[in-house]
Image (tube, rainbow, N blue to C red; front, side, top):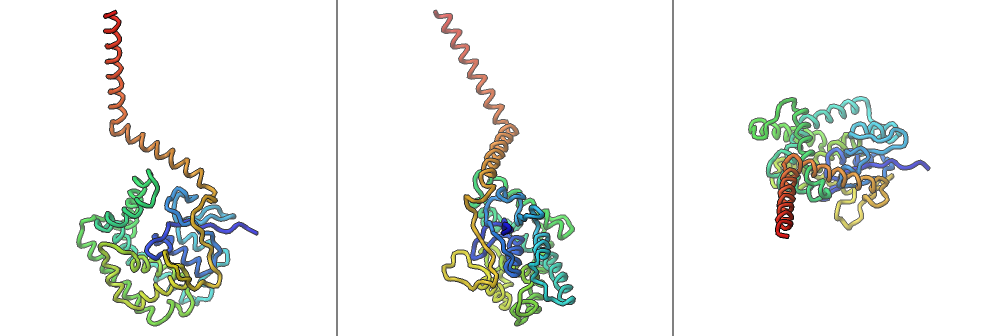
Length: 320
């Protein structure tokens, strides 16, 4: 029997299987398509074979990262949630995914990574507490930088954190997008009827983060809660396809469940990554010490101590 495909993604919180939008997209698509994955929910990206998440470890193509590439690979392996869609529905899927990336994703990134209060009191705090020491000192900062770069790339304009006009437009676009999604869903269970497709995985991953994360400031959540059908849509997918974090009541499982296993001692790269983590952390701290002058100060202090010791010894010899 062939080894199962292994998916590495961020851990979950707040009733969600994972707190990262890209990881949640892949995990949800795997549930919808019945892909047999062994899932590692981890809190250290260095434990991922690619150093990034989500990452899919395969037998034939090595490690694949980025949600679109992972989903395309699963389709090639005959795990296709869109197999019964018409040509028009396929075109609609591409159009709505583009709408999400252009209108809703920028506001989602801003909410978690740019809004100062949310970032300090929730996002950075959550990752800093979860990521092991000493990586928690610099990995959240790296993630913050990448989030800002992604936001600038999507909007195709320089982003200033204090630009009120850009921020206002960002949230207006997101609210308009959610309202449009609500109108399109209507009373249907999923966007194309009674069965979920890849579009549902993308939409759910964005909306579920907004709906289920407790933030000090969450304008997106306030608007989403006025759209009852979208809220019911998110809760239904969570109840049917996922066991909510912290829930003790069994949930309805899909026909072909996806294997989910927490990170454990059996994870093949754990020992290697632990050694690399310690080595790189020590190297980073030494580099920081050199740059800030700590090493040179200590060196001067040692020299002074040596000079004083030699002087004392000379005096002792003179006295003798």
